[in-house]
Length: 485
Image 1 (spheres, rainbow, N blue to C red):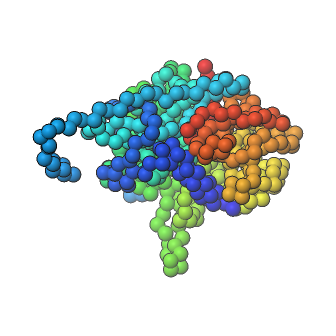
Image 2 (tube, rainbow, N blue to C red):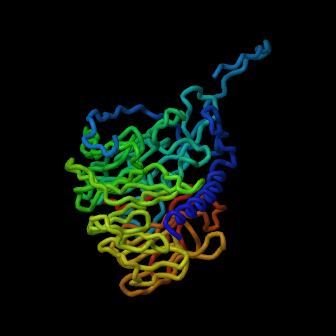
């Protein structure tokens, strides 16, 4: 099982369970039509009314410095003379209560999640209310403006948009923990989709700023002072300083927008550019992609290797630097900085473990810690797993094991130093994260006797575990970060 297969399986599971949760939250209302004119039935209980402001954002005017490739209104009906119809008053909305659970071990932990919100249409206040997916935090951040973040993830339609924000477009913290980068929707004017921006949450200054008018898949610089991303066939860097403008590094209309990875040293960005398929066999085209290193100082880019890829779904984790910056994981293989292949094609999905050049291999044979050459250093679990998280101190691994549709499985914790493993929860979920002090596991789930609606729960990570505690109801877990209060 390779990394692409893992993503496909996880995506199918996520969409299956999300559909059930969304239908429950929306009161089993029919989803809005895919067209721009579709409407949705109003949820039974609605959050506060908000409006979406227009925010001016500076755009870059610099020229890239390097290139590697040259309704019509309805007719009114007659009004009866006996009575004159009056407009239906707008519904009175009360705020959704914010849970304030008293759970020991969650101090300094900030949870980011998505929840259904309701946005009043600008056209007619007497029409249906349109449910959107909004960004929320627990504990609530006072500088998160609902007018901006309630519609951040788009209108509920067929869940095609919201699932992005649990994978490549997930909000993520800067290496120093001060900032959180929050991508929203990218604009597609041809499909009448407006962008909702890429936002920066500054936890130290307690402010939120929009960095870009569109949502992008970005990587932090190791110094936490800038991001890099691909948009419109151009690789950019962007300082997070107020008033900074994007700086173009490379223009290539074949650049993949989800692959722009800043090296640990901060001097190079790795990108992928796809080449047209070669029809070597009828109806079986072969796709190739150039793995290229782009110096941040403006020096010419260098093609590291050409990879064969396949016409499937991709995730940004397929390109990743080793912790020491001497190797690149690319499409389930590892290359050195001379472009030499130094690994086998792994029998499962691999991810770098922090601190050194070990890899975590997950697949149908369970979980192993391996070397780049594929040698097994430690066997973590015999059971299948595709969702895991390493504690902040790097000592313990929490993972969801088993096959969800088989009805067996749970959450286990493995101590990498002592080679001990213990179960902490009998149930499934995704994603899985650690509290700031590493004492608890936080899990997005649809179980816990909850009628299959989305919830976020937490459970002790200690041997023997404890009963799970509900953290947030009707909530989809996005990310958990340490909060420097």
